[in-house]
Length: 141
Image (cartoon, rainbow, N blue to C red; front, side, top):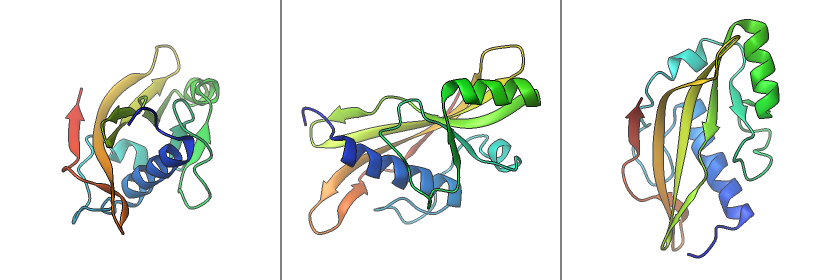
């Protein structure tokens, strides 16, 4: 796979965000994934996702507020701290796409601190669409 189309990447971003934010299994998986420190995000009134590295609008069915990096930083400064999700750049691996979604904590006076992440590898499965083809990996920092 030479490049990931923006439409495909947007679909995969949405699938991963919906699974994480609703605690449901990813397509192709039987159970929800473990995500280190995710409770810090759920303790907030709003679930924040940074637009950095997002392929496009994630849609109204994603239960989160998408903000620019500057808006995330401003909210963290105003509140003292703010948990938010942020994608790393997607990786194209032959016929697969690997996404890494990180949880960060932003503060009022220091750069954001990465707390944990999940990595999911998707492949296009005939008659089923994009599915996670390996168990998602949880990463602690």
